[in-house]
Image (cartoon, rainbow, N blue to C red; front, side, top):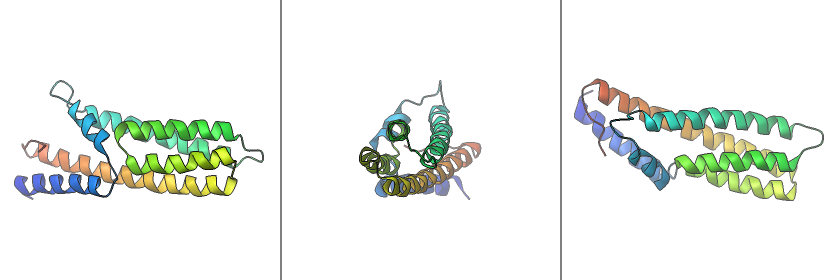
Length: 149
């Protein structure tokens, strides 16, 4: 694929992520922190988010499988996931965490389990979409192009 088409594809794809509320303005601010001294800043931060999120999702699954659920612990994990998703602009993950926290406060096991599934879906979506966006960026750079703003 030629470079101009790749760049147009990236611009359109990135716009769709905002339009679908997968990302919000926080992701734009994250991108603005990247410069020539740290060209992999966004990928590194997002990779840390992926690692942390997967750990937290596993912890939440374990916590909700217990006979006696520690809702304060569950809420602490959800709060952490909400904060990290907010910091990279993963808007749909963040919004799912807000609902999850409400069920924790009510100590509603079924609501928590349903929210865990929803958070997993939203996390999987943002991960897949960001990985694809990073692949497009890499294709552009390896073709000698620059990433359009």
